[in-house]
Image (cartoon, rainbow, N blue to C red; front, side, top):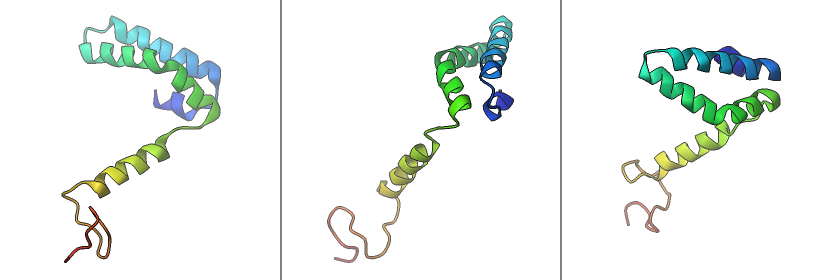
Length: 89
């Protein structure tokens, strides 16, 4: 599957996941069957990524960074406002 994401060939992006999904469905391992179902749900997005090279990875990182920064257990940077109060006031 990693090779599929690294290629730029739409045909390969359609054929290889389909081959893997067929193999996984025949497997006796339930986790593989669940992954196969997930791949089938997102196959058009996988193909779109392969053909365009675009992803929302940067947005996801920004969102995760903001969530960590804004979490109450994360110390506020000195001089910053959190909850409208400067530290030490």
